[in-house]
Image 1 (cartoon, rainbow over the protein chains, first blue to last red):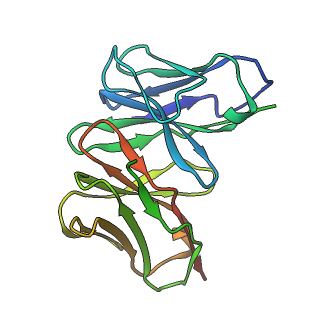
Image 2 (cartoon, rainbow over the protein chains, first blue to last red):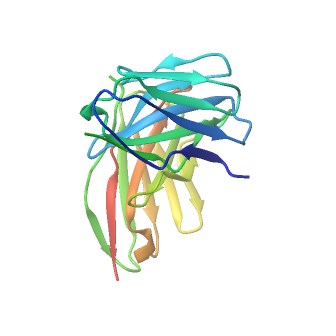
Length: 112
Length: 110
């Protein structure tokens, strides 16, 4: 039981490049989330997916797109990376009923 | 705007002491409350959940909830150097979103 997995662990991009962050969970959770974490600002929600086939914007969606590929997988895409998107990105899934979220190991992204 | 507030710290306690971490929230309809521990360079790890007023104990950890005062706290008894981490308070109002505080850094001195 791997829980929530994310790839890659580290990535360096140049301004304007694109990339997709991958996330998968094996806990059969319906809801999945993408957060970014910046020093002193805590976790901020980018997008979430309440169930397979649905996605919704969070607090900071600009510059990002998401795809809920199936129940297990939820990807985050940066179409044209900017230095302001340098951050640590966490994927999470939620256990229904108790609302507990479980996090993946994170992706540390640097945009030059 | 719905908010979750924590003192950023650092909170420094000697080994064996009780560490007390506090959190306030603004949305009165909040229903679920969580404490996460995050070691430097790692992801948040759920350590406590609390849903009703009062205390909930799990080993050396006790979560306390007071909905009237919109206040939730985490007590760590017999603090150990391995408890040194950032502790995130999180609040859910019953929907799909959970709001996280910015965290309190705890240092336990050996």
